[in-house]
Image (cartoon, rainbow, N blue to C red; front, side):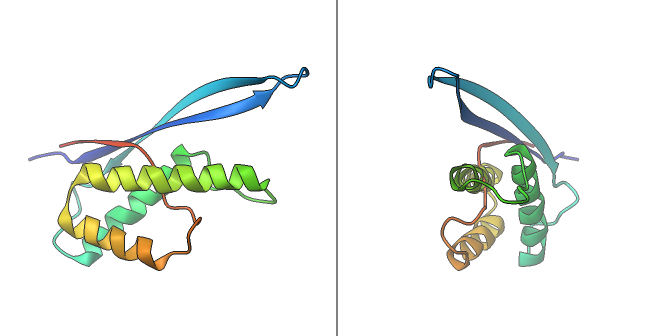
Amino acid sequence: MRTKTCMLLLSFLAATASSLATADTLVTMNSEVVRYDDIRLISPVGAAVLFGRLRNAAMRACGGPLSGPQQLATQQRYDACVRDTLAKAVDEVNEPVLTKYYESRRSATVPGRATEKNVTAAR
């Protein structure tokens, strides 16, 4: 039996300003393991289940979901992180039914909405 796993690796930069108005760059790596060996990727239903798992993992890896009033820049960084992470995860999984489902969802969403970032798949 082949085990299917997708590991989300998140790399993002967070700039912090010191009291002298200089920015220090911090690099934070977060990862999530997404198992999908229990999903049959032969239909849009299976693709939707895996997409949901990938999206939720990307949201956690990117530090969210965000709640409450957020500064616009913070919300935009989070949205971009989630969007980029999900795109990379779908690419790494490399299953046509998932790719088709993702593309249909991406074209139906409003630009700037959260969707995802950086994944490595191991089977």
